[in-house]
Image 1 (cartoon, rainbow, N blue to C red):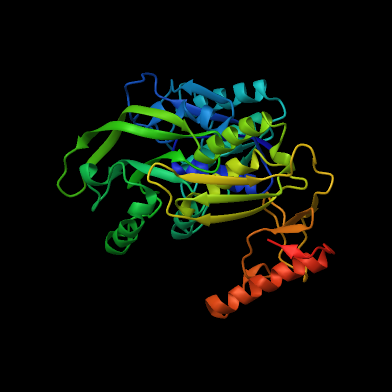
Image 2 (image 1 turned 30 degrees about the vertical axis):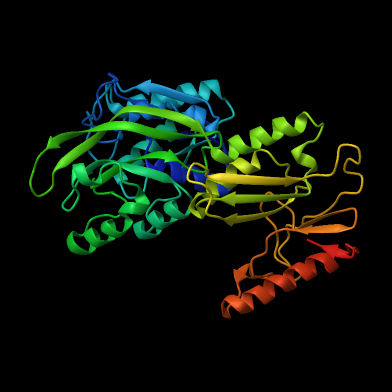
Length: 409
């Protein structure tokens, strides 16, 4: 379904968008509710996270999607679990926001939200969706929070804490820290005090600076101040107030844009590439890098690729090598093996790259992982056994695809 995604700026709304995309749904637009005044960080809202709202404006540039925003006029007039339409309630602001989104994009069928455990919030989103004839998509609902937190980190969500309000969390110490940095402490606080590791009890809030949704740019938080709302010695409450930030082009996006421009002058195109080496300084950024990579390479007959982590220079997050046939030769002799079916032959290749390409007597093999083809699971047996399986996968890719050439690279 085509959907509009509610975004607060936090990790939850961004992760649910990724889950929607993984299940085949298409994000048409982003939607956000913000305070009446720009200098207000947090409202006394039962529904909406507003800390960090100053940065959400950059989400349109980062994601390459339209962003629809509305200032919150109402408050929590009706605070019971069930909700009915109530004048001047903050829920009616969500209704107005999504109604406008539907008016602008009539093919929208669904709404993505970051609901995990709050029936209060979920029921109100569902209420608004019912009034507008939309479907609520909440794929994190009632999922184990430890699994969700790990999933967010694994997905490449780079989010920092912008509010803390729990025992064991200190504003001046923990605000601005990433989920990856905070994960061990959050699990420790869960064991000590029963804290929710995803912050569902109000323990903390986050602001997403980068994620696979951001295919065009990422946000850099240049400077901020800590605002104490409560100096309580046991559980102080503080928020991060951004004072300077900017959006910077994703490193992979920038590198591929530069490569595209350089190749165009030679009458060469990335769509004709034979092989790509993608070098990352940190493999934790793979998900975001892969999302940007997808924007530049075709889904049909893409180049083979290998992606590895290397100790790149300190000022370099990514390096890319691209091998192409010459403009004179073109792609007349270019052949591609891109099998996406799961079979017993060799692991399927569901990424934006082929198992192999051949041109002028050479086969260029994609990087291989020792997966069992039928289950797509890592084979047991340790590192050296896995190397042998990966080599066997390469052999199957060559001979099973009848690439009868003498040399492979």
